Image (cartoon, rainbow, N blue to C red; front, side, top):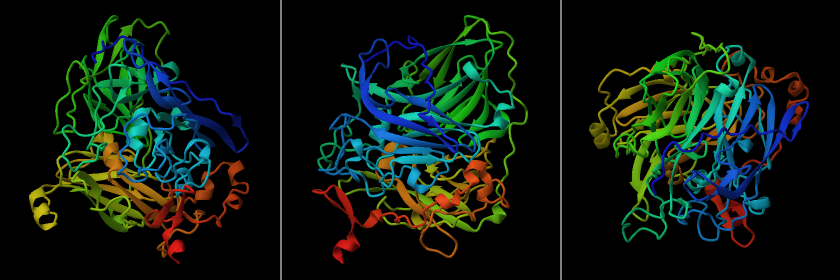
Length: 584
């Protein structure tokens, strides 16, 4: 179906209003609903799922240090999924509910119970819940740098479907320090949630039920190695336009696509000024002719239209191959287009905003302080249906917990990619720093398992020298990350953020534990040292209201989490049971 680009204006997602503002926190309720949304004026309304009845969901704004509590409410009325479900994947087998959701606030430093673990899913009215479901209300302390985060569905085995159906939105942490910089703000600070979709003739979402010409060993409905739509969607509209004045604009860009990377350029040839990445502001602004953004990455950029003549139309162009970066190039008339800026006369007065030469101070981790080196290999095998199976450390999601980092200790994670494509690796709970990338001999590694580096380490480019929670792991390179876990113990996950890879089966659990302990047993980590100041204790990071009795509120006697690797599902009672308790 061919749609005309640049027909519809760019929608600006509304900012969600809280239900209640309390002394110690702000409380929200966010409802997941099914409804019809019009992606393009030439397209019939499309059945979608979304937060608060919109795609993408509303922007949630937080203030650094002020706790937010959110009840994520599943009100989706569909009994079956609106997209094809592969019943051979985890938690998706016959008899399991298809309309399952759980929300992950991507980039947030939160306790495990509020992280949106894939197995903490639940159905409408919490009638059926996954083995790691523990609470209805999630707590977000926001004790981290001001940054662009995002919330999205994370249900085991169907994340790719739920996000594609519309369950995604932006979450912005603000701070007094950032406001003092006088960056473009207000109507000149605009979120851009970029996704890609395909549509059937009746306007419904198209998502493949199998690979083209599937082998006879494949199930009737099967996950694919990846999916990229032919229509680029920004803030819920296909190829929209935005009227801009002759002045500076700040754009918070999120790649919310399942698989697609974007290599973005402006048709005017002007530069982007990148000021921030996943974990907040960079130390200094970086001027770039193009930016490459992987799924789940965020880039905070300023574009200055001051020198562009009135009446100029500037197209945001995509030139990234899919799969990235060895696949097919984009069609310059469809997925090679993202959106258009239309320059209008400045009617709002003088632009007094600036991009200061110094944005923030980032305390750099040092390699000499590393306590442990972990190798994380990217592996491709085959499952029981002879389909491609993407894994980390040659283990599937249910392959047991191997990584048990100690809270507060600095680790070096070496992500080894001997494959063809770039994988965006996301680690829950923390922000990390990119140390470097080192090319290696892939053939020798494949034959012997030994790393033979072929050149000197490549230092991070300037726009990757900030805090990150997603990193592009390039093929033929060892990507080295400096990672320090905390401030909580418990079970989290890390995974590839190509959602088809994440669902099958490129996601692994890890346990953050105390020193001298093989298992986490309590979430009260009050002795943890804050990553931004090694000598500053966690308690000092809370507001006065939170300090007052904060630690008394932590229930150290809460039941520990179920072991997802030894749970048995009872279809009649819709519950999980521990295999050891049944066998014993």
